[in-house]
Length: 156
Image (cartoon, rainbow, N blue to C red; front, side, top):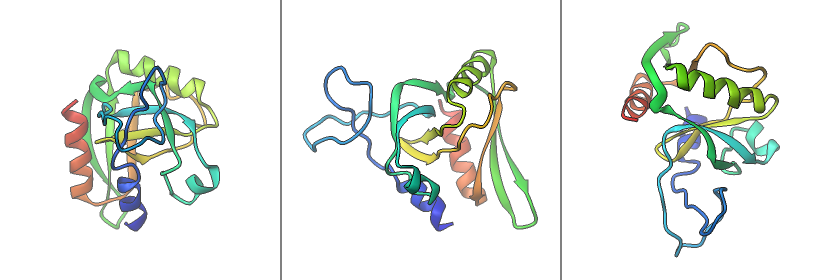
């Protein structure tokens, strides 16, 4: 639970760099804050050791290389295990399925960042392309946490 909460707070305020940069990273307080769409983003930079310990604060995403979760056809909550642990299962439409396949094919062996409300909630490593157009967001989620994520995905 503590790791999940850390992940949810990891990037509680994301600011874009001014100018033509497509990267999100360090900014000054005078730079304008913008909200990224909920989605799956290509990670352009990260600290592998920090990421392996669940620390998502080192992640910098490419704001132009992502799958917008507005391409979701169905979003449901599933319970698994005997410990009342939940996951959010997202099924994509045809456009989203193709984009997810391309994104996962290009990023095999690397993490992709799942962002909800401008926060990286997880950054799984991609072992092989995802061709089926369905993925789950899990990690010891309570029902309320899963419901919150589901509502955010559905509002896209």
